[in-house]
Image (cartoon, rainbow, N blue to C red; front, side, top):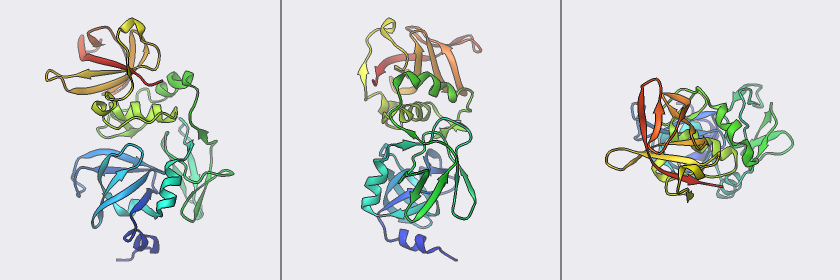
Length: 268
């Protein structure tokens, strides 16, 4: 099997970066394993374990762990890992986010992807420079942008483990929107519910507050972004807008409440 030089180097390194637009992160070292989340271009990771061609990694951004094919990574040094992870530039909420590689090929990136080593219209992975076909976005954006950023994902299909316009789950949607605002949230809804400040009453809710919902056992199973104190945008089948009250989310299509309100948090 032919292996590129940088793949040989990757076998010896502890840190790496996602070099493809979207990479599935799985629960086990198998193509048949559940996709638990995704890496996006520019995500930096720590390599925890190797079982070729699978690497178990930890994502710097949200500390999420999982398995992926090592060929979707490029090795970086510890210094590059820290520099990339502190990047202030992101791919904006748009559908024409193209990068041009040195060989002339294109990458189309998902909103909230990172742009490592960004300077003068280029981003860099190790010694490779990619030319941006769009204007980079520096986080944080003004908080007034949250409605626009959330609505960008409207009607995106639901995908367990998804983080993009072409498939997103409830917590991946919330994480992506807040990342575009420069606010780092954990990956799962139950983890996100441990962050932020409690909003005690629904009438006190303001645009951008985050509502969490539980099941009969009291476990947090769903999350969404409040557009007002009676309206929420969330990923359930698709990213959609539904009415909210003290009981939870009311789904007109089902003619009943679909999610039971547990707690509301504020992150800014």
